[in-house]
Image (cartoon, rainbow, N blue to C red; front, side, top):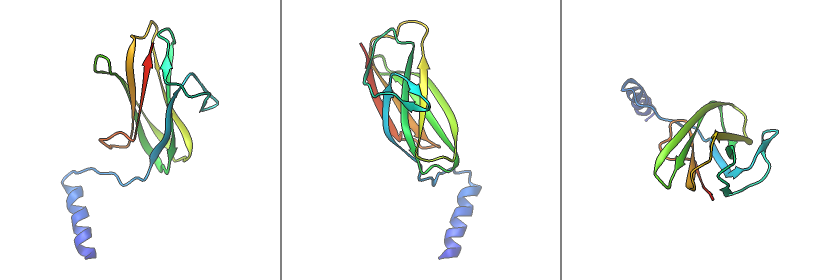
Length: 133
C-alpha cells in the first residue's frame, strides 16, 4: 500500500497538479474602524461614504511559514472586484491578519464584501459583508 501511495504522489507531482495540505484557517473575521498595535479597535458592519479606509481582519490559526493569504474586496451592489491584496505569513499562529482598502473620494453607497483565502484554496476561508450608508 505504501508503494501505491508514493507512486500516486509522484505521479501527481509530475503532472503539475498543485494542492495544499495546510491546516491553516481564519476565525473571527470582521470589519473595524481602525487597527491599533496590530488589532482591531471595534467591530462594525457599516461605514459612512466619507471614511478614507475600510479595515478587514481575522485571526490566522495553524499557519506554517510562508502561508499565503489573499483578501478580495468586492462591491456587491454593482457586482465587481475592487481590489485583491496578497501577502505571506511568517509562521505565526493566533495573530490578526488584516487588509485595508483606501479611497480618496466618497465610497459608493451599497453593499460590499471581503473574501479571505488561504494558499490556493478556491473557496474563501472567511467572508465578511458590510455596507456603506
